[in-house]
Image (tube, rainbow, N blue to C red):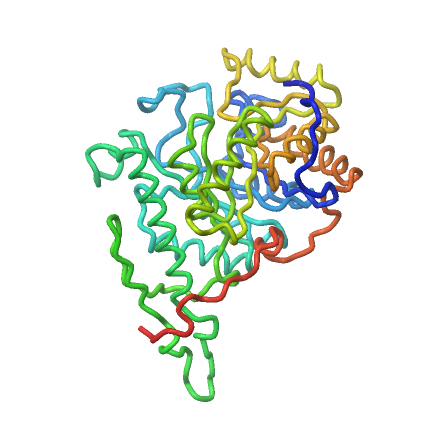
Length: 404
């Protein structure tokens, strides 16, 4: 698409700021992006590369960045590694990358992807709690499930993947265990009194005693309660998704990412997720829904289309995505975001087609355009990710309960 869709009436006050995030992955979401002159492919596995990308996002006042991750090499085949040598293959660990970048940033949220299917929630809980401590309250996670059999073979835990519904139920249990472990230390459990020799109040650590179909975890965590209390939990669906993925977002997430083709698709997804959340008795709890959108931005729409076509030629095939793909100007993209927002969206997670070009186009082109329209912040208003998203810091669920 190279222009914005027809306008429609807002469902929320137009003066309320949009939330914006950027999804970081390699040199960008187009498979030929690494071949651009400014792509820095030789630095893709260095800390500096990722620090520079996050610094650019923070300069644009974005709410947060997400870091992609997986348990197998990227592939264009659904059956396993494709053997291609002309596309980026390999990633750094998302949680460790976020932790490395954290001390170099001050405000932006850091949200690494974590696969629930082949990991233990105890390990993930302390990793994200640690990230929240080192970032001083800016951590989140994006939980995802793994379906391919070739990923399962890396671990040997299961002979075949779980059915969709069970995979997502396991992910919901994974999140529940993580959340309970974050609460297993009271906020004031650490005394740190040198004079009395008391470092910790043992009565303020709690067993979580989780017993479910997929996990049995006693707790408590080994990591003190995160600065946010509960780091932000997010989950995504795809254009072919819905159903179980929507249910996971509705029951377990603070932020959901939806992949849709247009405003009508966004409206339908938002309605389904909101209904599922209401059915779960959680309608009073805030839930942000972001639309995923892949973007190619230039000074004019023909230039954006031409750049995308040139990358397609390098890749040997037209670019396709589970999201809508936008090619145009910052003003046209701002029109689209404001229109789609009427579907009940809180914001957008933008996937830069070519990171070196499109991330600065977002921060230096789109953001000023949204600011001129009065729908995006001009300064960071909070120092935590929950604060940026307007989410209160929750009280620990075990604070008034008997100790472990």
